[in-house]
Amino acid sequence: MNLRKSFIVALTLVASASLSAQNRSQGGIDAQMLQQIQKSAAATIHPAVRNAMAANSIDDLAQNYRNLQVNDTHFSVETPVQSIHNQRQSGRCWMYSSFNVFRANFARQHGDSVRVEYSHDYLFFYDQLEKANLMLQGVIDCADKPIDDLRVQFFFKNPINDGGTFCGAADLAEKYGLVPVEAQPETYSAERTSKMRQIIGSKLREFGLELRSMVANKKSASAIKQRKTEMLGTIYSMLSLILGEPVKQFTYTFRNKNGKPVGPAKTYTPLEFFRETQGGPINGTFIMAMNDPRRPYYKTYEVELDRHTYDGHNWRYVNLPMEDIAAMAIASLKDSTKLYSSYDVGKQLNRNVGYLSLDNYDYATLFSTTFPMNKADRIATFDSGSTHAMTLCAVDLDDNGKPVKWKVENSWGADSGQKGYIIMTNEWFNEYSFRLVVDNKYVPERIMKAYQTAPVMVMPEDPLFGTDD
Image 1: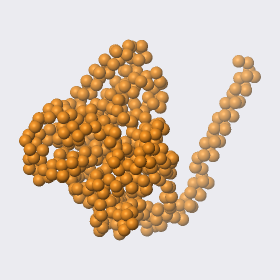
Image 2 (image 1 turned 90 degrees about the horizontal axis):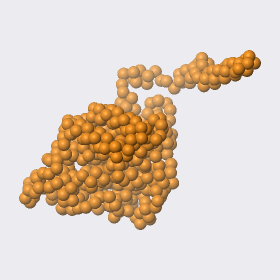
Image 3 (image 1 turned 30 degrees about the vertical axis):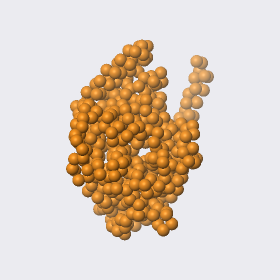
Image 4 (image 1 turned 120 degrees about the vertical axis):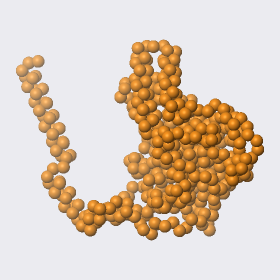
C-alpha cells in the first residue's frame, strides 16, 4: 500500500470513529438533558409519596383498599367441588390444571360418586425424559447450522423446563398412561424443581455439543442414534434418583368422595389405568382457543417445537375474540365441565384474598403517570403473556346471561386465596386471559371449521408462546 492510500485509509478510520462518537453522544444523556430530566421529575415527585415509598412496599401504597375483601362469592353457574392441590416450587401448573380436568371428567362420568387423584410425579418423570430427547434430537437435526443460529440457540438456551400446556398432558398420558398418587407420591425435588432443572440442563448441553461434534465428524446416523440412546440412559438414571423410577404395575381400589372403597382392588399397568379412568384417547376431543388481538381472528396457528414429545403434537390453536371464548366457557360450565385455561396471573393479583381486578392497584396515581397499553401492545412488547394455568370452574351471569365474574381452581394450596380458588372480574378476564381448552361438544360449527383449516406456522420465540408455569 502506497503512502497516499495509507493516508486515505487512516483519514477514513478517523472520520468513522468521529462519526461513531458523535452518534453516541447524541444518543446519550448529556449534562443539559440531565437537567431537563431532573426538572421534569421534580414536578411529579410529591415529598409525602417519596417518604412513604422509602418505608413501604409499592403494592401496599398502590392497593385499592375497597378490594381487600371479596364479599360477592356467589356464582350462578358452578361445577362440582374437588380437592385443591399444591404445585409448590415447581412450574407444573399446566399438569395440575390438566389433571383437574381429567379427574373432574372421571368423577362426572361416575355421578361424582367415585374419585381419583393422579400422580403428578409419575407423568412428570416422562415429561422430563421426553423433553431431554426433544432437545438432543433437535440438536442433531440442526447440527449443520452454526452454534449461534437462532434455532440451535433455542435448544441450548432452554434444554429442559417444567412448563407446558394441556396438549403435552394429553400426549404424555396417552403414551405412558396415568397412575394414582398412592402408587407414586411426590418426591422432594418434584415439588422443588430448580436444582434438578439446572443439573440436568447442564448435562444436556454437554451432550448436545458431543452430538454436534459427531455430526461434524461424519459419524453414521446409527452411531449417533446409539450415542443419543446412551445419553438418555444417563438422564433416565438421574431422573430415577430425583423422582423415583416410574411404577410399572400397581394394585388400586377406587374410593368415593368420603374415602370409602368402591369395588374390589385390581391390578393395573399405567396404560390400563389411563383407559379405565379416561375411557380412550384425549387428542382429537378438544380444541385450544387463544385470544391474540395482534393477529386475525378465526385463523388457526401452530407453534413449531412447542411440544413435550418429539413425535407429539405442536401447540395448535384457533385465534378468537374474547366473546367467543367466553361463550364456549359458559356452555361448558353450564354442563358441569371444567376447563383448562391460562392467564397472566401476576397482573393486578391480590394474592392474599385471591382476587383479580383491574383496579386492585393504582400504580398510575402513585407514580403520577399513565399505563395506556392495550392487550395487543402488551403482548407485542413482552409486557404480558400467559404465565400460569388454572382450571376454570365457575361463572356468574347477569340477568342478560353476560359474565360478571369467573372463578378458577388454582394449584397453590387450599390455604391460598379463596380457599384455593381465585375470583376474577370479567374485565380482568378479557384483558389477561389467553388460552382455553374446550371439549369439541361445546365448540360451534363455524369455530370448528376455522380450527380445522391449515395452520399458519409460528415460532416459539413469539412473545405469547411461552409455556404455562
